[in-house]
Amino acid sequence: MKIGVYGGSFNPPHLGHVRAAQACKRALGLERVLVIPASIPPHKQMASGSATAMERLKLTQLAFSQLPGFAVLDMELRREGKSYTVDTIRALKEQYKQGEMYLMMGTDMFLSFQDWYCPEEIAKNARLVCFSRYDADAKNRESLLKQADTLEAQFGERPVLLENDCFDISSTEARRLLRFGIAAPYLPEAVLREIEAEGLYGVGENDKGLSFERLKDVSLALHKSSRVPHAIGVCETAREMAKKYGADETLAARAGILHDVTKALNAKQQLLLAEKWNVDLTDFERANPQLLHAKTGAAAAREIFGECEAVQSAIEWHTTGKPNMTKLEKIVYLADMIEPNRTYTGVEAIRAAAEKDLDEGVLLALERTIAHLQEEGFAVCEDSVRARAFLLSERKSS
Picture (cartoon, rainbow, N blue to C red):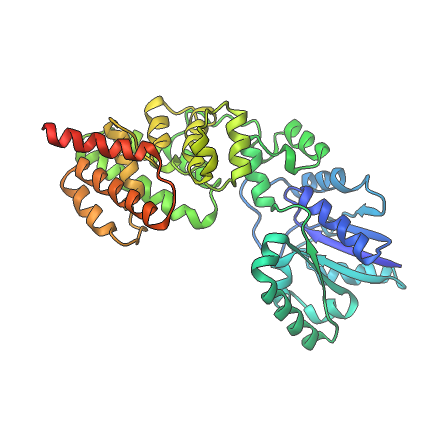
């Protein structure tokens, strides 16, 4: 009997898990696929706000149990301590003495396999199978092939590499989409219903009127980790500029920490969020989805966090600017351009201008952005052009 073994935290299980496993079952002709949620994953910490082990087990059962040839096992939840795969393989080999085991995993786990606990024993008793996401496959095919060569040389059998172009999503992304209320296209329906009914992953929580520290924690959890320093940098820079130029420091800090809160969403997800919250989008914004996070971020500030109109507006215009900006809008726009993590050519000149005069800093930032877009052959937003013209007109009339 050919048996697939599919472990993971399933936090939560999503359609990427389900469709990849189904494709793997078909490609390898597996008679059974054993889906095994981990109690305590040895390779990573569970994210803050995660479901409990028993809740993840129930969600995984809802995702897989009705599929022909699939079974969800609680064997790792019944063991104490970390959920080491080698212990699971040992137990399954004892149960399925004549079974031919295939250990199924995604790209990240495959690329780190030699660092697992007892990888030799695992590889001896189960054929390794990696299904990579289509985007990772295009970028990392060479790494996958090199790893397959390494593991074949080390353990004596070549892993199976399967291209997975079924569904591109991670559990981290699924948790983010749940908080934004747009996870329906990415989760099995029964899983989503259970999450909503039990209020898992923060679904249904009231995040309005949070203290700044709580707002910071909740909002930063919605970012990709690589973008967190930028959000913090903008927040702190906006607060300092507000103090310098006589604006509300509290509002500046809140707008700064929230300004990119929807930045981690892709274009399709941005449009889902805009539709959910009835955000008006221009044809230019739809054609240039890198701009969408400003409007959806402003909507998130309103709908999720209950922020005031001044904060919403500062977030909405932080990317393009607009004519006749308020002091807070100028501060957040400029903070996004000059926070300490920014290193692009010309940033020091904009920082120096901002130190002397707020409008001078904003004008130089607008001019630099417009020139850069033109040099690179990108379309320039008319709001930025009008914002520059407005500031130049004010300078002439003063």
